[in-house]
Picture 1 (tube, helix red, strand yellow):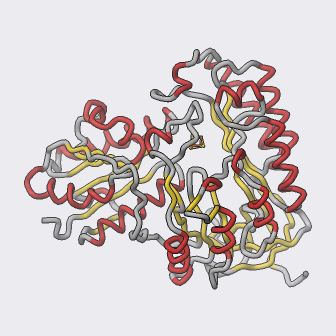
Picture 2 (picture 1 turned 45 degrees about the horizontal axis):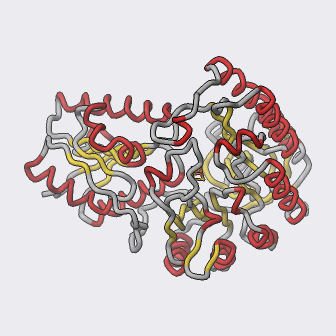
Picture 3 (picture 1 turned 180 degrees about the vertical axis):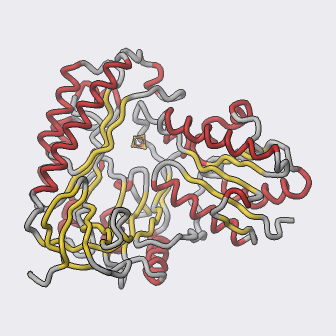
Length: 439
Ligand code: SF4
């Protein structure tokens, strides 16, 4: 039986994976498993993995091998792999890490308590993979949230876009949305539990649809939830970012003036090969509209360099895009082949040293634009939602502005408070300032 079996769960990758780990904890607790944050006392170790890049998989594999070595002294330890790498590799996982007992992709977690029961009841040592349910959206399960100020709420799962470099549609399945009623009720619960901020999650939130309810409709309805202080959402696909969404965001209120809008490239030639479904011009037109309607909006992005066929001219267009948009931050990556994607069939012709050099140039430029955007905040008054004591000073707290910038504030505060702060300096990647009574 599972009586008092202790589970340690480690998560890698995106916010959706963190949310899924909260769902898994909830599923396990409801079947009387205990969650532990110390792997040394665990009877079961689960790793929720990410497949987006080779590097992410290698990290998870390293971690699994190191946990696998614990079996020498603890032969009944169960080692499970969840998430995108589990879905991608399936049975092959056993060849990669022979100590693995259990492999479950992102749409198979309802089976987890039963499969763990089986392992604990005498089948320990067997290797099991579970079938993913393509329509699974975990309706009826409330995540088991840790403390903090932000609650993630999944509104949809999967992706239909098939960007040529991306593994997500193959491992997370096709798009399916959750009902607005269930989403709103989950947001209400999160607020009741003390979370002032909610982030709505989906691989492409803009294509959310439930009967005649679109994403702007849903966002507007969630923004009305009593007690909610801040509302964010990720990820927006630029092609699907609609005028209705921009006008909904422009109403302000609890909807934060910040948007993560992955450009991936500034070159039409590359965007086409990436199958992104928009041109540089269309992307910039949306950026202009966003800035017209929401002047203080901050924009962040994802950028990929060294994609097959990317020339120096193509790359220069990406650098120009960074200069033109003046992103507040960017997640920058160099291309690596993901087996099973369309891009894996293309000639990976940009040499590794060129990829590295382009990545360095991209990082340097995005740091420069982000730095100047932060410096423009000096002298302004911002509302900071207090999150945690500062990791650098016992005399300061760390929080975030509505635009998503990190801020450090000296003084003693409560987690979840929102305070007005006059920005006095930029320290590294953070704004720094004192609480103010000025208007
Ligand atoms: S929109 Fe493209 S990059 Fe994003 S998850 Fe879907 S396929 Fe991947």
